[in-house]
Amino acid sequence: MRKVTLRGKVGNKGYAEGEAIVVRNSFGFWGTVDQHKGIITDRFNEARGKSFVGKILVVPSTKGSSANWVMLRLCGRLKTNPKAIISGKGDPLIVGASIENGTPYMYNFDKDPLAKIETGDYVKMNAEDGVVEVHKK
Image 1 (cartoon, rainbow, N blue to C red):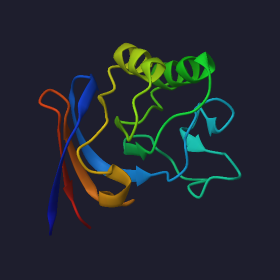
Image 2: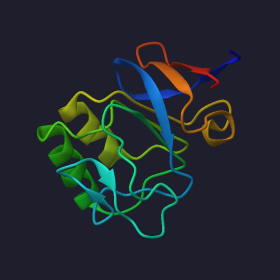
Image 3: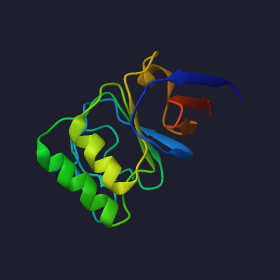
Image 4: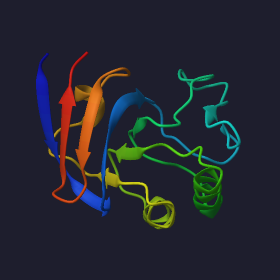
């Protein structure tokens, strides 16, 4: 199994490991997910119908307004939030929601996470030291 290491900025500290779910389009939690089930419902998203519960969510960026923050917080309260979030670009609203949920969050990597991580890869995210290890499937 091949391993790739990424280094990035920490939005919320913590440690998580698990299977990655990659969303290649800018992602929002408002109107595009079922918060009660943690399933992507956006009809324009290639990951439609897939769950991010207990997985490492990998996105290029997040989109939307403060409603994004509210919906991610709701996922946390319902225990349907991702185990961790990796984003190409940072979002202060997602930082706030991840802190409240205790969800590790990292962004702005030395390598493009979407070029290095695929759905199904096993990811170890150390958001204490700003390091992500990707174990290719």
